[in-house]
Amino acid sequence: MSMVSRRGALGGAAAAAAMMLSGCGLSGKDVSAEAQEAAAAVDGVTSAVLEQKLGSRFQSLLRGRLAIAESGHEAGLAVYDEAMRAVVTVIHDRLDDETARRMQVGGIIGVLTERAELDALDLDPDMPVEDPRLDRVSAGAFYARYGLG
Image (cartoon, rainbow, N blue to C red; front, side, top):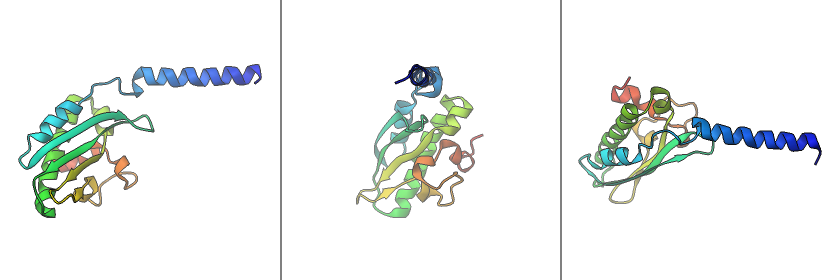
């Protein structure tokens, strides 16, 4: 390996480490426990398990499962919607605006009693996201739906 390529490799590694330590990672506030508690308090949610992680594109994401005590799709969707409202409201209230809007929440799945699953795109198939994939659904995409600013 030549001297230039070694310097380049070391510089790249140092830049990546600096980026992770400067706030691009999860050095901000972890809202998972508070969001989990808010979701679990919704009528019809029997349990909530949420975790905050760093995604593959260095974005913060909140993911997990919400057990819903409903078997029908429509009734389950109503409970899931209220649980997501609770989660997104915690994110909105506890994080700075940019961080809150960008927090990925598409990995929060609602599980009905017969094991059917609900996700963010079930709430709004035309969700305003760049790419209609669950890993692209941010808390900010719910702000209009839940009256958050």
